[in-house]
Length: 472
Image (cartoon, rainbow, N blue to C red; front, side):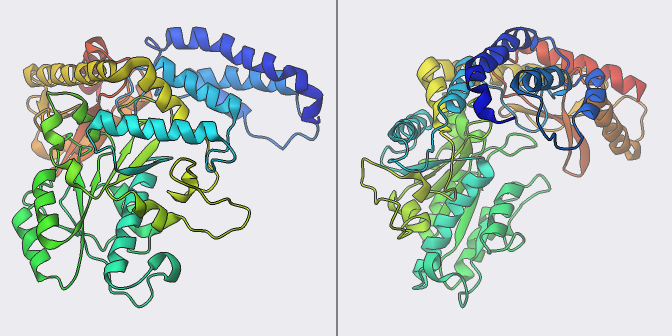
């Protein structure tokens, strides 16, 4: 079936989705995160490619029928696994507009609208998290891409210190780039280094305990022993407990030894939004590059990362200057954002970010962040008061790390018990929370970053954990 024959259905098909959205979203607060009854419907999806096609109406109705039943409802308030936000009403609507307008967002000439919205969204994000207005930036698909972007700029800077334009000539003949971090370094940072050819496992980690807290003295000794510049990676928001590296002290080291400081603030950067937690990101404005995810604590749809650099020229020097005749050169006003990051073709991901910031402003996002701080503290108190649960780390931000520890169970059985409990939680589906290993102990971790989540939702998590734990 030629899609041209369905030109008249373009609007009605979107109406079909809109009509399904209202009951789905209205029920989202009460839905199981994963309903086992929906899983069998996945068997309907595979099959041979249709020769003629079913037509848009039947196809979209099938997708809605299967999707609303079989999806993991991670945009709801009871998904505490990983660090996954939802989508605020304005952000979700903005994302629909993104698909409706389908802008090619890499080039100003292709879409002045998309480029303008990206500039505004980046300016507002800098304002929201307390970064200087003169910094450069770009939107990316994720924090992994944001880390890649910031560390690529660091690599370009580092190679330049050795007299090499790595963008043009590559790494051949250069020494290994020293990268130093504390024990909170995230796998996305390692993946970025892997992609950049620096090496996933070349990063030197300096920890003073089994929690991963950075050993600044050991890091300084290592920096003092180096013959040349290095890159330091700081973590603003560790995934197991929400803890932070001392960014300000790391910035001191970077200044003292002439290093590039990159901060991975995937979700923790938004601690800057609240006066209660802004001290945790003190010093981030002294970094050279910062990476974060809007689709975590800002609550916009996937894919919405961003990277900022202190020197606004650094991103263009790293990713731009293609020298292709059909790509017009840009100026300070007509920005081609595909010359500021690793993507060439890119969707207009600024639209949902712009929409949520425009709709709810600084005060609305501060209220959301502080509600999550309160809800996390509430869950922490419930855990501490329960005779069969153990809080494994102080609640510092929006992540609660704990384990099931009923009286009389030997220590050597607790890891196995909590691993089994984690599997039972996911199979049950009423709430979602993942397991991790923290300080050598198998633990449960709940990340509270969804705009819908309230104390009632973590109270259900608390009850389900104890209920399933007693059966495990």
